[in-house]
Amino acid sequence: MDKVKKVFGLREYQPQLGILVVQTPYFDFDSFPQMAEHLLQQLSATVVEKQWDADIHSWLIDFEGCQMLLKSEHYSESVWLEALNVKSSREELDYLANLFRCGF
Image (cartoon, rainbow, N blue to C red; front, side):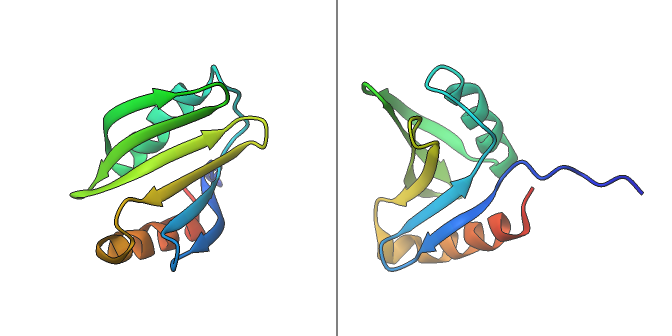
């Protein structure tokens, strides 16, 4: 039986802050969009708006009607999801945290 390589996982979940830190494959500033598109495709999430600054990508995404930010900072190789409304996003964040805990 072949083992499937898990590309995405959970680094940390802070439900009280609405932040979910994601384990990802290596990326840099230029390769983030390709990796992020793959992640969003796996989650069946859509991009609403994209923004980038000197070293941070911030994408507004929609996941099952819940809007959140997908952010990355390439120097620290950090990727995280940040709820726009922590209280109303708790169910979706809990679901995503469990999904990332399993890895995919």
